[in-house]
Image (tube, rainbow, N blue to C red; front, side):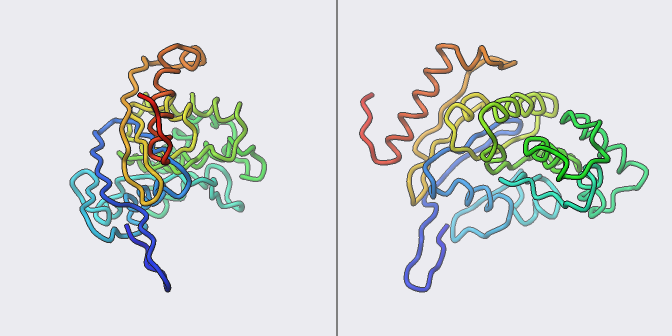
Length: 250
């Protein structure tokens, strides 16, 4: 992916190749500006690759978008302040003209899934930041897409809230078995959540390595304190240092 500029071009991604299997939880991690969000935006058909091939379930990103095959969770909740929590979750179902008799039940089921069934009539400004992000996740899941794209959804939250939402997101993933692609700057977050962690280099973004996460489920605070967790986090950190231009002893 090359962004054309007036004076010079910026190569955001170069020779980046990755296969993601259905039902995986993939975390993309790397230094700022390495192309993590760019890759997510390419998958979502928000931008078009300069060259190469990108397929989502055998479809082009444009075809996948038209088929409603993915939901997107942004860094900020991006909720409509004048709509209630329930009506925010209903929004994609309204846009897709889902049968009225099923819309409300589906939206309420998604709120229950994210633990907000008692907040349907509240407005976003009445919720904490973590609760607002849960609403945005419920909205992304409302039309039951097979793929969930998440761009640092918990990055602005405090550590305790983020750890709690990490656990809730894992529970959602285990219940729904969606394919998840998750952008993060946090090594421990990536290791805790993922089936595989994809480590990217400094710009131009390439894939330095992929770490298989073999931690058992369900995962908990004890998981974060286990020797294997630290081994995997260390491996991710080594790849990050190598991709960032630091020598790392093997």
